[in-house]
Image (cartoon, rainbow, N blue to C red; front, side):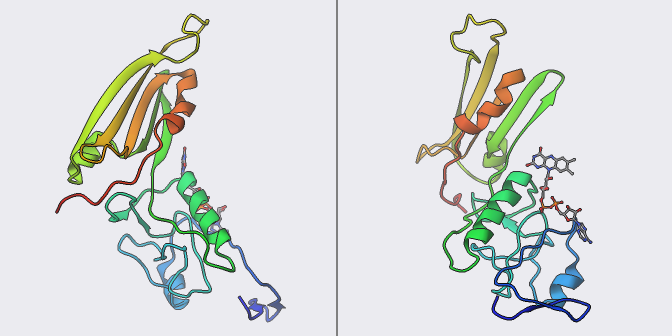
Length: 197
Ligand SMILES: Cc1cc2nc3c(=O)[nH]c(=O)nc-3n(C[C@H](O)[C@H](O)[C@H](O)COP(=O)(O)OP(=O)(O)OC[C@H]3O[C@@H](n4cnc5c(N)ncnc54)[C@H](O)[C@@H]3O)c2cc1C
């Protein structure tokens, strides 16, 4: 940003970089009036550096168009982890293009009736739907070491692998209390190639 930022009251704000965090739903007219493009799911279109159609404006978060890391198709995932990653990429590219966002990975956990459920990346059924040839494995282990510690319980983990490359596009975990935070550590999703068309 080389020119001063004009405010509505006429004041001009000298700034090299502006950071704005607003909105819950994309106001398409606002984006279009700023000559920004809207993507297929209704978000502001950005490239891998998080730059919009106006290279001086980066955008990130729920209001931004996303593509899945697997296959590159439009993704409607809206998560704080994704928004935060996009913001880091946008921030790093404030002056030079230094980082890229290759695509969206969903990771979340929740608790239902005492069970902690977590997932990262693709589930087996979603992978099949997208045309990937995947195999999966499950295991059940104690969630504490040593297993005889008070409060120890069983934690079940499922990992989904691409059958040919053996890369890991995702995994899920089910446990009690302490297991929820662990799925991120045990399921680092890997990049797999586009599914056969
Ligand atoms: C109930 C719920 C549960 C969720 N749980 C999870 C979860 O477990 N894990 C997860 O990763 N994500 C979760 N999310 C999603 C996550 O909250 C969003 O993906 C994330 O907050 C998006 O960040 P953002 O910066 O794009 O938008 P926001 O965090 O929504 O920030 C937008 C900001 O703009 C402000 N604003 C709005 N309009 C105006 C205006 N006109 N002028 C000025 N300011 C304005 C808002 O007050 C807000 O502070 C959840 C969302 C909901 C609703």
